[in-house]
Length: 325
Image (cartoon, rainbow, N blue to C red; front, side, top):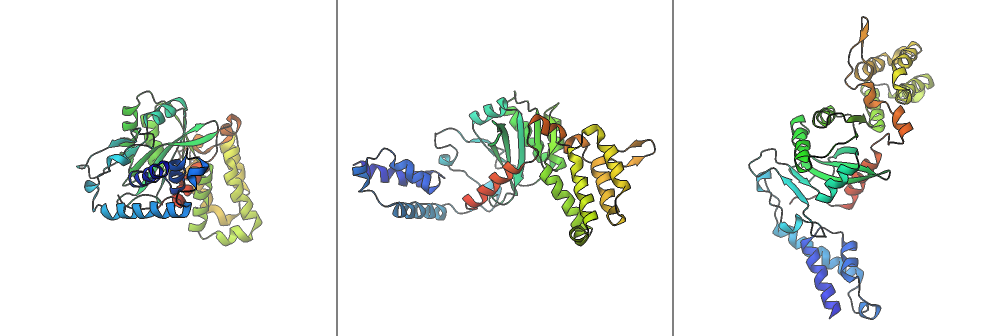
C-alpha cells in the first residue's frame, strides 16, 4: 500500500511541479522502510517515469506565440510548500509584460539583509523573454537569490517598473548597498527608487570592460607580448584598490609612465571612470569613482564582485532546460 502511494505521489509531483527528478524521487520515497522499499521501482525506472510524464505535459502545453498568450498554470504559481510564488504579472494587455517571482518570506529576507546584488542572465531566459533578472541578498556572507523577474528588454523604464513594484509589495525595503555590473540603467534606477543607497560596480565586470576595450583597439598582441604594456593595464585596474580620495593622483602618476601605444585606452578610462580634465576641474565620468572603487569594501568585508551571482546563473544554465511555457 505504501509503495503504491509513494509511486502515485511521485507521478503527481512530476506533473504538477518543476522539482528536479532526484529531489522529487527522494521526497516521494521518504519514510518508506527498508522492507517496503525493496518493492519500489529502481531509481532509473522512476527517473524514466518522471521524464515521460513531463514530456507529455510539454506536448499538451504548446509554446505561446506572444506574451499575451502566456498562462502560467496555478500549480506552477506556488512553491513545494504551497506558498504563493508569482508575486506579479503585469497583465496580458501589457506589450512589455513582466513576471516577478518570489515569496513573502523572500521579501522579508530582502528587508532584513540590506546588502543586495542584482544581475541579469540571458542564457536561461524562456522564449519571448530577453533575460532573467535576479535580486540577491547577502546573508552570512552568502549571496542568496530571492527575487526572479522575466524581462523582455534592458530599458531603464523597465527597471523602474520592477523596483517600484518591489517597493509596492514591501514598502519598508531600504537597501544599504547594491552591487551590479556596469549597466548604467540599473544603477540609475536603484539610486532613483532607493534614496541613499550605495551603488557599487562589480570588479570582475570592470576588468571585463577593460579587456573588451583592449580587444576593440586591437591591443591584444601588445598585452600578451609587451610586459610594460601588460603591467600598465593591470595598474589601471588596480586603481580600484586605492583609497578613493587618492585615485585621481594615482591615475595622473600612472599616465606619466604609460607607453604611447595605450593612449587610447587611457583616454577611455579617463572619460569613463575618472573624468576628463576641463580647465581647473574634471568633468563627471560616466561611472563615478565611488561606484567602482573597492577600497572601503575590502575593509568592510563586503564582496568586490558579483561572481557568486554569476556562479548561480551558471548552475541554473546547466541544471535546467530552457523551454517555453
